[in-house]
Length: 529
Image 1 (cartoon, one colour):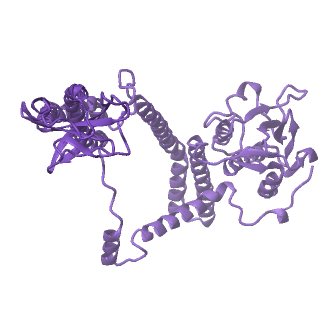
Image 2 (cartoon, rainbow, N blue to C red):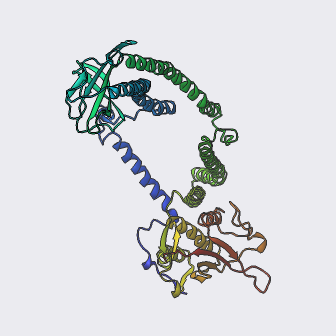
Image 3 (cartoon, one colour):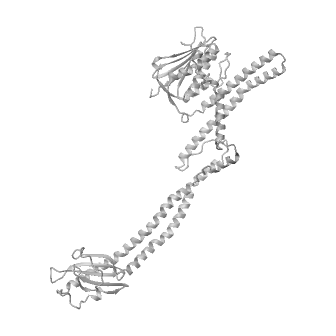
């Protein structure tokens, strides 16, 4: 066992139990600094107003209803012009099909009649009985025919009919149809490649040009039949979508009303059953928040009740001693009253600090406070400097024993919270050990874990009360040492938050009474150790 001298203590340590006022002053300073920074560090109210005006505006609030409408109607409005273009193209194609079939049949018929004519090198006879069938107007459509050689040489018919491309002749006995211009007017031209009867060498191209009035009339009818319903369906679809969204979002409105109708103190969970599937995760998260808020409010109410109960006696004692000092003229009595007043105020401050520590511990959230891997043996030596000073001030012997095998091993902890836990264990040992007492802190390895022991030679704790000493405000009867009854409750809560194993041993001596007390805490090793 090695006693630690006051010279080994690190100055300025913030881990001591009485460090709370220092943190309070620091937080007040930070609050004043933050308040000053809100106005840009200027006390002039006009300049503060100027800085308020220059702040960035809050983003515009959007609604789910508007977002859904935007994502539905924006593509719809973009696709509708494309639909109109496709409608015109499809209407033209549909209108061309029956007229092209008729033009193809007409072209083949004329080609057969041309084939029946006797071809001479000078051309066809002057009178060809084709004009009545191949040229003229039928049903508002004008037809013009033409016979040419494959190289473009004119033979008969209307010479103004657009010629075919000599480089791209139709297959023999096949019909090709194309659009072309005739006297500035768009026409549909068919071409048939055939062989004359009196020779196997000479081929002819028979073309028929057809005006497009009838085609365009049919295409316009198709377009009107397709486009006009869209002007009716589109607004109707918008109205139906609007109505559907209104109905679909009604559960949100009902949920909002349920929340607004609640009392301010009603933190019961909302009913998830029967709500739309999309709202279930939101309600579950909201209920989790309500549970945490309810737990926090319960902790606050318990803190207020405990503080009111625990502070009642010290404050009453302070008032009594102050009144005695006022009424007394004896300097010794006044000095005694003031000394008692100081002790009462110290006890009140200790109780309040313990209550604050317990409240902070109970509201500890691992997701909010980051755990870090710590070389525990080295950290324990730093904490032990304060404990040695406390032991020397109380007239006790304090020792720290560290097994060399645990040097460098790391554990995942929150250093401030674990320091608070060990401070309370050591403080408890120093308060209740015999005078002069012996307090020993040991660190060794046990079952792939670090085992920390805090041992004292005090009167011990009866076995029947060992499970009760971790409760709030519980104190073993018969002990004269002052205390708040909160230290071991804080220890248990921090161990629970860190998922540490905590146990108590109080050996039995030969006379049947408990003698000495040992608290054991197991720390799981970090994987990075």
